[in-house]
Amino acid sequence: IPLAWRGILEMTGRDRARFLHGMCTNEIKKLQPGQGCMAAIVNRQGKMVADIIVHATENALLVQMDRSLLAGVIEHLSRFLVADDVTLKPAAAALLGVYGSKARGLLGLPELPDFHGVMRSAVFVARNRTLGLDGYDLIVPEARPGEAERLLAHGVKPGSPELYEALRIENGFPRWGVDMDATMLPMEA
Image 1 (spheres, one colour):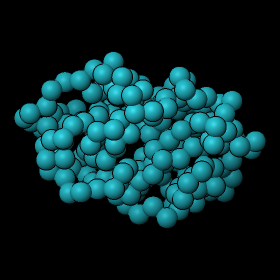
Image 2: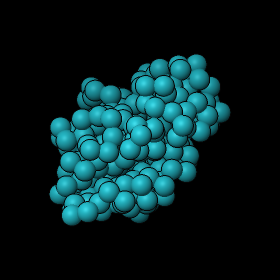
Image 3: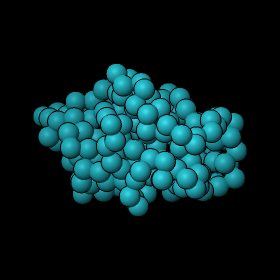
Image 4: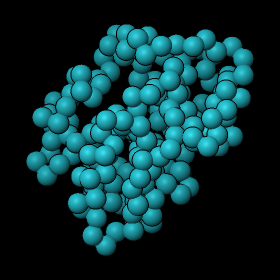
């Protein structure tokens, strides 16, 4: 399923993990390359700025969020950058979701904890079971548009955003702008 409503913020610089750790609700500093987690970026009052999924790679943090939030999150985080070695930019990448009992085999992946991932042919592939199915997010660099198709050469049936939405609702997974927004505390969401 093309996840066109999701975007990626790429955070680089030696202070990226420490900086994001101080701005959100999860243990970002402890993430090693290939590990990931869900979190929320919050403001000074503790209200949500964005719900995020963070993936650590060797040289960056790839921060998934609703695409409509990218510019606002960059502006929000930039206000707190003082002497930190951190660069924030929207990644030129597409996000695809692959779900179902055959997903792991098709992608040739080992068993992974939720939100942890591996690089496969320039595509970062991370486990994501938020729809109640075994699933994986593929972060595909814009410069390598055919890589995802090569990874999924056989046995994949296209899905739709409507199917994604039905599974999301059925499994009680909240979506920004529909079930939660900037008026909420993370515990309320």
